Image (cartoon, rainbow, N blue to C red; front, side, top):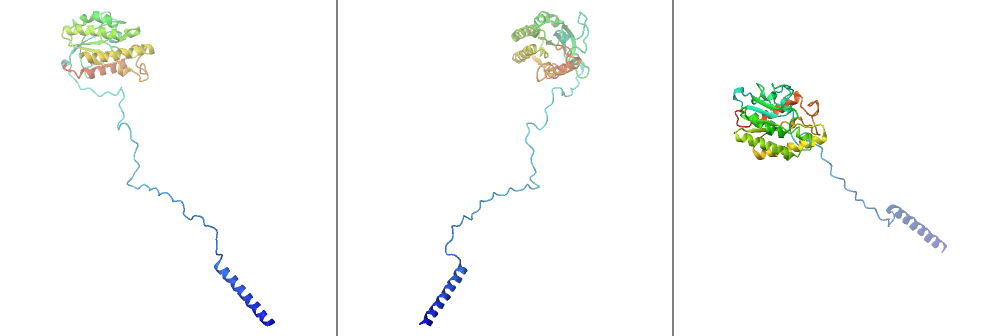
Length: 273
């Protein structure tokens, strides 16, 4: 009997050893849940630029820079004998530096001096009626003296002395209308100038208002507009630097710009220019 029990014990030990070997070979029968193995998708790669796809410049408002107000195209020559005869009615800006009480000769300080130039000019000189410190109401009283010189065109530069006081732009335009009525009565066309800026902000605001009224009136009445004041104006207000010595009168350099602005407009009308 004893040998039988010993045989059974030995067999049991062998079976235990076989079970341990199988477990070691196959591993556990249950495991902890696995974490997800799905990775976050990577973004699509950005294509690298090719040689054919060069960076494009940013769009701009204009392909070419805008010309400044001083960029004036060369004027075509017009023979003096083919130009209309102009008489000028105005104040000290028209008269210039002339001290002769009979109004004397035109000088480079007269705004229209270069308008008579042999090469760039657009009119012949027919005379001047102008006086220092005068307003448009004085010019109304002098218009027939100017028309007595038999001009082909009457050119009026007035309003600077009007805006030295509290003058309504309608008052200036009313005087210009009387001057035009006189010119119409003798069949002479009229051209009107805009006035220069002022250094004083209050006077400059009145000058802007007068110029706006002059432009509107000229367009309505068919009067030739000579925008002689605009080339002298600083975009920030008042005069452009270096174009006046006293805040009121143009320098000879400024007068050149005024004359060129006038010539450009006069060349557009059928008066032989």
